[in-house]
Image 1 (cartoon, one colour):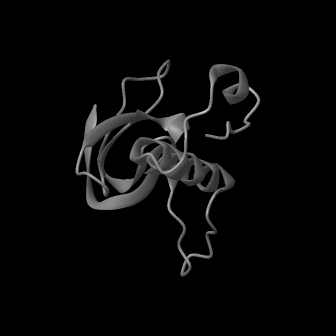
Image 2 (cartoon, one colour; image 1 turned 135 degrees about the horizontal axis):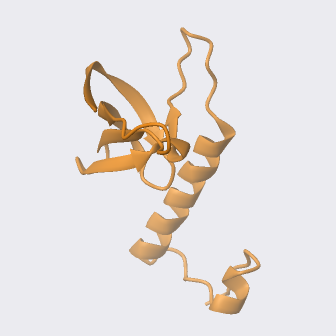
Length: 103
């Protein structure tokens, strides 16, 4: 079943970024809910399974930013730095230990 969300819900998709959930797909009892999300950064639409979706922080509701969202945003920033060439990409041996390789 597909449910259009009106109004859309501000969410963070782990590994993708902030966006607005515009719909939700429910395939039934044995499946995760799927959140149809428009990402803020690039407008891409992603269908994200429930375990990867978090509500954005909301000061009025007293909801702080989830630690999972903080970690995801740090990872996304790191990936952006590597893609831009600002930070060298670690070798495979170092990447498995979370260490950087000096250029």
